[in-house]
Length: 445
Image (cartoon, rainbow, N blue to C red):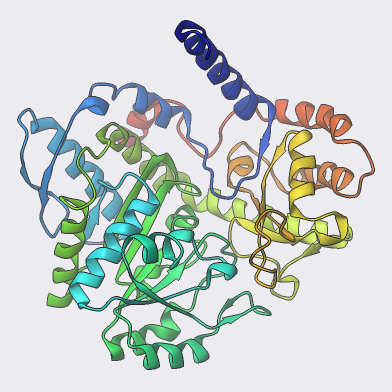
């Protein structure tokens, strides 16, 4: 084993290399990664002491601090309450909890809380093969940690969406305590409105995992789950919503049953699954929410345009992009079947060698045991859009990707052009460049 001091030196050097590599030298197209603004990063830098502190305790049904078990909390409680109210205001909810440290944590607390409130361990979910997050599945958090029984929505592969008529039959037959929507491979809005009545009929709570599309929802460019019938939104805060890593749950408890659910979810947060809740991220979360309030519509619209442009351009140039008849996507991502060019594993690695970073992905019709070499790629556009890419830039980027996909040039040759393109986009758009700029905007507003 290396000397302790050498290990530390290697750690520091690897960190420096990573920051340069992923932030300065790569084009990032991972659909589950966000890009923080200079103002959000500065707010994180202003919160070092807060990142060291503990805040255990109970919240009320507005999401405000009710009781804490440590001393020294007077400003920490204000910070949590202000962050909560900012998120509630942005998403027009009456309750939120910002103590979650990730989207998976938000799902854990929500699924546990709703199963306690409903006294029902059955949950209808999108099939994992059709885009659900692993935390929804019986093989992951829902099944192996919480012991929930999963029943799948019926999924229409041609529509790349849940089949509302057939899923209504499933919900009536299964009588679950929870019905979930949302996911990770998530191209089109899910049919919440169409299935809300049957969920109410069987007494099921409706949970919507917005982790991938929260920024698009904030910008009014996807769907509005809480107005369409979702009881609760769960989400991470660092994908299309460009904040610090963390999680959030939101809802508007207007009935005794929903108030009961809120209390059970809060119990599932503390004491069941959280102690320290990483408070140092909360001021930065508030700044990110302000940015989405000011710039979110413009940003979200351009993200979707860029994704649709890439889908059309790749399709026109001989690559199979899923959901062609539906315009490829209404979200920040597209799904591509790359089997005829060597498969997802090969092409994702070849593109990485050219410094274009995206991920291989199982497609709904794949053999689900082929996780190591699936047919597909999942390609996200939120990072590059926030760096300033427009439709013309997207087509140029697609040309570079096509050179790799079709083996027109070696990845190492394309890499030089990728580096040159990346240098043209050194800033971050649709945001504040400093906390002071944000303060100036607020004062003028």
